[in-house]
Amino acid sequence: MGLWQKWFGKKNKTKKAEEMKPNKSLEKNLAIIKEGFLKDCEDIVYREFEIGKEGQYKAATIHVDGMADKKLVNEFALNNLMVMARDIDPEPGLLKKGLYELIEKQNIAVTELKEVETIDEAVLNILSGETVLLLDNYEKIIIIASKGWPARSPAEPETEAVIRGPRDGLVETLRMNTTLIRRRIRDHRLKVKNYQVGVRSKTDVSVMYIDDIADKKVLQELDTRLNAIDIDAILDSAQLEELIEDKWLSIFPQIQNTERPDVAASAIYHGRIVVVVDNSPFALIVPSTINAMMQSAEDYYERWQIASVVRLLRYFCLLIALFAPALYVSITSFHPQMIPTDLALTLAGTRRGVPFPAIVEALIMEVTIEILREAGVRLPGAIGSTIGIVGGLVIGQAAVEAGIVGPLMVIVVAITAIASFAIPSYNAAISIRMLRFVVLFAAAAFGLYGIMLVILLVLIHLCSLKSFGIPYLSPFTAWVQNLSDLKDTVVRSPQLIMNDRDMNANKNQKNRFDDKRQENFDIEEQE
Image (cartoon, rainbow, N blue to C red; front, side):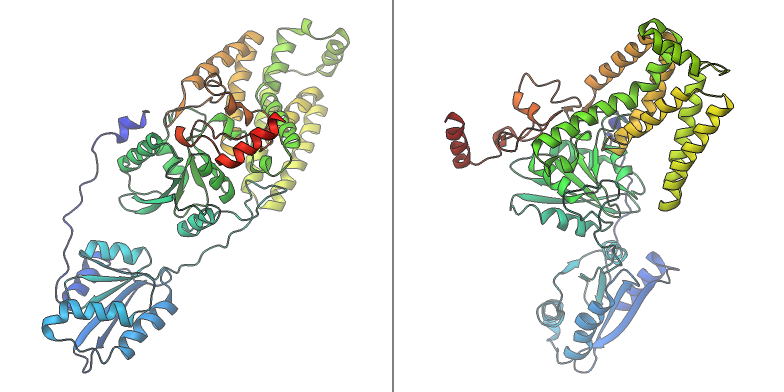
C-alpha cells in the first residue's frame, strides 16, 4: 500500500446525478439530447426518417461527425432501415419486441448491436464514436457499433528502436493496441478487462493478463487502485501511471512503460500485467523492478553472449552516468593523492587559469549539456540532432579557450552524457540525471565520503521501494529464495536454461517449459 491511498483510498467518488430514463416519445428524447446534453455541439449529426409500409414508425440516428464510420452508417444502417425495412409492419402489441428483433436480426448488418436503458449511456456512446438509433414508442435506445475515427498506422517506435526485432509499435487507438498484443498471445487464457477512468473524459483502459500465470494479489491491487481514482480526465498513460504507483514522491519510476507490443506480450508471458490506455501509444507494465528498466527487447533477439556483454556495458554506463562528474570533483578537490603523480600534474596543468572551483566548473558544463539536450528534443528531428552535436562541440571548445572550464571536465561531462543514453528506459535515465546532481553536491561538500553517504541513502530507499508488493530491487534482494531469477539480470542466460518465470508470476506456473520438453532437456543435461 502506498501514499496514493491518502488521496484515493477513501470513498471520494463524485456523486453522479440520477441517470435519465428515455421517453417513449422520439421528439422528447431528441429534445433532451439536443438541448440538455449536446447543446451547442455542431459536430453532432442528427438524421430523422420513417420506416414501415406507410412510414408510420419514426426513427432517428445520432453520431459525431468524424468519429463514426460514415460508410458503415449510411450503407449498413440507414440504407437498410429506410429502403429495405419498408415492409416491416409488426402488430401493435408486438411493437416493443418485434420491431427491435427485426432490426437486429434482419435489417442492420453490423457486427455489434446493443440496447441501453438510459440517455446518459446513449450520450456516452455517441461521444465514444458509436451511432445511436432512437425509435418512436420504444423505451430503450439502440447502439450501433460504428467507431471509425482516423488512426495512425503501427510504425517503428522512436523511443525503443532495435536493430533486430519486430518493427511495429503501439498507436493511440486502444483496440488496435490490444489487437497487436493479442496477436502475439494465442492463448484463450489471455484476459482483457475494461475500465473507464476520468469523471469527464471517460477514458477507456484495458488490463491484459494471462489468467493462470498472473499473480492474483497484484491483479486485485491494480483493480482496487484503478477503481479508487477520482479525477476529471486522463489524457495519457503517464497520468494514470502517477496515480497508481506506490510512492509518487520517489524519483525512481515504479511502473515500466513501453511502446512495443512484443515487450508487452513478453511481460504478460512472464506473469506481469499490462495496462493499455486509450489515446496513448505507451502501455504500462506492472509490477516493475530496476532490473526490468535495464533490459531491452533486443537482448532476447540476439545470441545470449552478445546480449550479456551489452548488458554488462549498460550497467557500467549506469555507473558512469551517475558518478563520473562527482568523482572528478571529489578527487580534484579532496583526494588528489589518490591519482598518480604524472596524471595529477597533467590535471593541474589543464586547470591552470580556470577561475572557478571544480564544483562550479562541473555545474556549468552539466547545466549546459542539459539545456542542449532539452533544446534538441523540442526542435524538429534533423535540426535537433544538429543543435545537440554542433552546440556541444562549439560551446565546449569555446569554454576551454575562454578558460572557464578545463578540457578534462569537458571530456568527463561528454562521456557522462553519452553513457546516460545507453540506459534503455527513458524514465530511469531521467532519474539518474537528477540523482547525478545530488551526488555532485555531496562530492563537493564531503568528497568520497559524501558519495558513499548518498549511495547508502539511495540503497536504503531502493530497498524500501515496492511496485505492487514486489521489491523494487528484486531479484537481487531475493536471490536466496530463488536462484533461477538471477539468470536474466546483469547477464542473460541461454533460453534453454531460463526455464522458470520470475517472481512476478503465479507460483503454480513458474516453469515455462512443458513437462515433455523439460524431461528431454534434463536427459540431455545428464548425458
